[in-house]
Image 1 (spheres, rainbow, N blue to C red):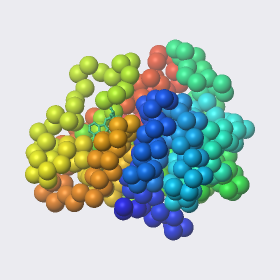
Image 2: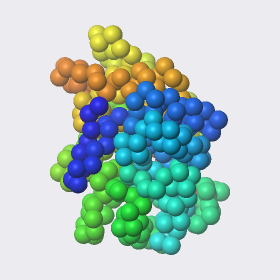
Image 3: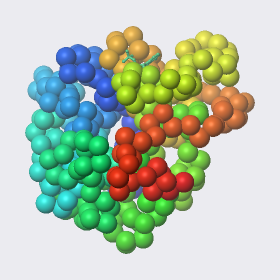
Length: 317
Ligand code: A2P
């Protein structure tokens, strides 16, 4: 599988397995199958509530020598309630303990949004902290300390705009190496792609298939369905593959890492195989025309009335 190479020579497999919405009860089996069929990059997060179970599958695979720890690329993310400098290390250590690992390959600030310690999700507008009360720089300094201690190999962010990345880079501290954002043919993130090329910040695409398994409260009834897109369907037909595979191959052909979620054995296999599909220039150009800057995950759950966050300040658009 193609990899993205970091400045120290470490290599991240370009296609990984997403675990958001993978329920405890099925994620253990999914990870076990994924490792068996060849996935080596797994994307996790504390807030997904399934790291303990994922960790059981990691431990079993490593202990039984089916896979070596150093062959795996494991990412996790710091939740919004642990942005204060004294809360970062404990949160990371909890994730490491749940995943049953000594170190992470990559640790990301999950959102440029902070909550009060202990608040999993604010009730209405109660429980938010503004980015003036706890700055991204403060969180980043604590993450650099975790890296210095050897608990993480690489650091990055998620859901960051070009403006927020620029602000972080301009502090002069070590730069984030990855920005993980929603990306698919309807949200092509061209500004972030250009910025990443200039500043050497890799992108990882989440919700590459539109995350149709989101819960009702974070779905809109009128949202588009990537699977019904005629252009994608036609390209899939020409290549004799599925629409999902075309959506995934598009990222790989752009040099962007992608983390489709599945807990189904057949779809896990199909998605992994998409990393080897070579799209033509014509295919790429046709997909490029599909952009409509459409976010399935627009972050509005962080912007109730009275919250210090608005959609404008979240995305800087
Ligand atoms: P399942 O887990 O049952 O396979 P995203 O990665 O954008 O979050 O999308 C995940 C959703 O897409 C899940 O509902 C997942 O279902 C489904 N999915 C994953 N792979 C495929 C595929 N190859 N074809 C169709 N649906 C898929």
